[in-house]
Length: 321
Image 1 (tube, one colour):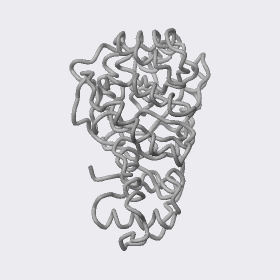
Image 2 (cartoon, one colour; image 1 turned 135 degrees about the horizontal axis):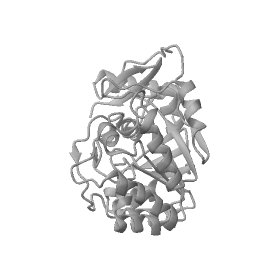
Image 3 (cartoon, rainbow, N blue to C red; image 1 turned 30 degrees about the vertical axis):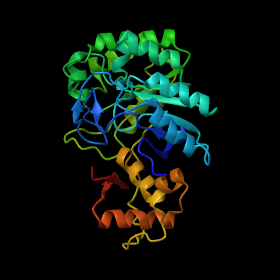
Image 4 (cartoon, rainbow, N blue to C red; image 1 turned 45 degrees about the vertical axis):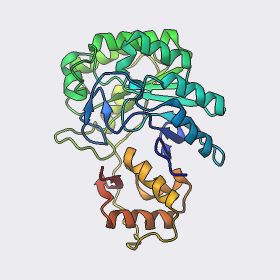
């Protein structure tokens, strides 16, 4: 079976081997973040709708889970999952299918909406990973570029706090730091104050470590991340660091991957469409041999289905969407 809505598993820094559930059409989002690894938002909206039904997602999960058991099932991918009105039904169906923990990755904007927040809280995923990259309107607009119908950052922060109170899910709040934008001064102070108010289980500090498509933005250096980590009153961890590594040129089979099945090739495309990755990450996540991944990616690159990126000495591939 070739999957339309599930992808991976992806080897996640935070979740281990994580099976993705993409319940929103590609690049449909209420934000247009400058650091997004998938490029610009094409459908910029805060309108909640049943974009993809719970039944369609469940049918794919039933088939997949017959033969594999990932560490997590994660709602997130190429858009904002809370825009899907059926998010609670999807989470409940996953819980009914298996005992695998469920994670919701969200930008947190729609938690400002009481109805959406209650739906997500009642479904009670095991873990929620929302983002908060700014706590003032100017920086929020500069980094996240919200749609015209988005709530204020004040309301978003209040929504995050309300979710912590109302839900049994553990909240790990991600903060994506950009050099010279939100890593110092009043911008950082505002974020720290907001975190004190929200009271998540922990803070996860992130910065650029994969290809991005916006010019003029830069990662925060490791020594600065270390300093910022110590500024929070709640537990804080750094989930991305700048690594000084040489590019490893792995030999690629430039012929088409005759030995790879259509399902394997489809799985590689599904992963790279949502998550730029290198050879080893693809192989480990999808449980395909490295030799076969080399052949599949070589064929896809030759046919211009994927493109190559070298970022900070690391090799990534992504789909030409």
